[in-house]
Amino acid sequence: MKTLHFSIITIACIVATSVVIVSVLSVQILTLQEQKRVLNETTQKLATNLTNYKDLFGDMPKNYTFLPFEVQTNVYVAGPLETVPVTTVIANQPYQIVANITKMENTQPLIYYYCIVQVSNSTGLGYHIGWGQGILTPKQSFSQCAVSWTPTVPGNYTLNAFAWRTLFGSPLANASTRYVQVVSSSSASTISIQYTNGTYASLPINYTITGDNKLLDAKMDSQSKSLILSLKSASNGTLVVSIPRVLLDAKTNDGQDDQFIVLEDGQEINYKQIDSTIIDRTLSIQFQNNTSSIEIIATHIV
Image 1 (cartoon, rainbow, N blue to C red):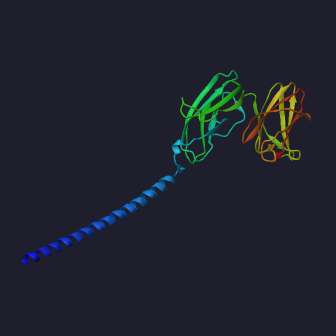
Image 2 (image 1 turned 90 degrees about the vertical axis):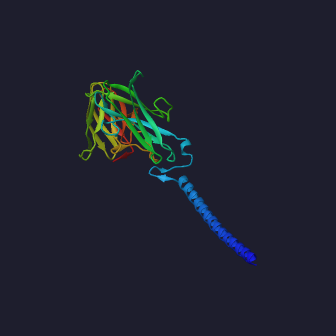
Image 3 (image 1 turned 135 degrees about the horizontal axis):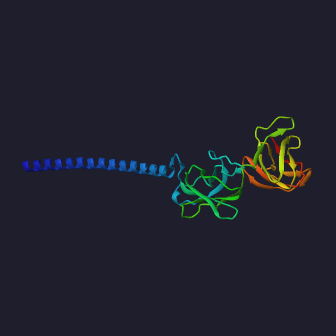
């Protein structure tokens, strides 16, 4: 009997111990399952956050390192301390050649680039070369680089700007080209603009004139929407004049640049537009001996 009683007690202890062990294992399994569920949810949230990751640079799309990208370049001459375009470039004065680098899509990744600027004279030979390094972040669509330039000889120059992956690599965009005329300090001038009511415009105009000729005055006629330039001419010559857009401009109905009408002593003549910026438009006008007036007629006047 004692042996049987002992066996029953032993079996009961074993069963109780097994129940406890099973209960503990069940709790541990449930705990592990809960931990796994939380881990899966955390992993899913992390993956979602990484997919839609945002920081100071903006959205980072999937596979951003493999995205194609495209940039555009635009080159012009500016003053030595600012990036505002200038229309009259004078020999032996310091300038900057500025290249605007524009990214065509804002979803693109960080772009590191080298900006290379080349200035050639009328012979086509390399006259001045400079370069700089820049960056476009995913949120940034516009960047600038500039190199210093002091032209020493008057004449016609060609500016080219390139955006390259590396200094010796492949280009990111087609080159931007601009033609610039450098004049001597003695031939570059400004003249104030007088309205027909006797007041003067806040901005003068820059001009150069060739030959034995002189620009006497500049008057703005609000009714005819025209700029009237009075000359004293003793020879054939060329007048290059930069007209501020805020004073006189020619626009189409959809806001695009339109042609001016240019009159020489009342007769319409041809002209060339040699430069156009957001600030002004520069015209080259050839005139004959004894011309007394050149009138530039537009469609918009301020």
